[in-house]
Length: 128
Image (cartoon, rainbow, N blue to C red; front, top):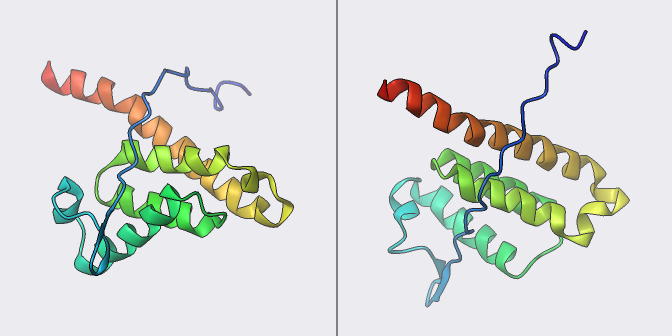
């Protein structure tokens, strides 16, 4: 039955940098970043706080999962993938109490990888 469950060839995907918010008088801000215009005000505020948590390597999977969702929603698939990989690189990802969250983040990472690896082929066929 390998016909229906073919694995895609793994291609090298460059890690995109995770945006790091700057400190401001109101907390953390991504002002001046292209991301600022892609999300609603509430989502951007939440993303700024989550990205600060990622920058200081917090041990809560929700931070990474939600930041990945918001970055993907903004159209930044590369940084969203990097956020997933940042969680999986932490020792907390292997803790038994976070097993369910780690699996969910790993599934999200696989989806983002397939979307990123499929992107060059679709743009090449559109250019022809």
